[in-house]
Image (tube, rainbow, N blue to C red; front, side, top):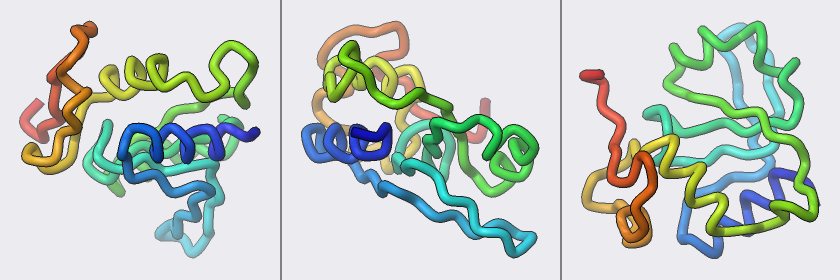
Length: 123
């Protein structure tokens, strides 16, 4: 299972908008293929997921300008191959950036270090 497939399964389990794989057209005409996009978390346009940091290391400012955050994650192992609770912690760490009326019910259920945090351009 790839990290994109893992996020897609977690998205189905938790009711998230996940596109995997995800192709992103950059301003310079290049299309970047990433493992996944998790919408409504992290940055305003969502969080890009890749197992290969080299894909994003030189364009981090461009991605931020486009409204994306990104996270590099290794391919799943037996330690976190589709562990929804573990992924909830990651999502809470990123924060909710979507419509406040659409925050998943589980987002505030178990207290984590960032439980209830929502992204705002004012920070």
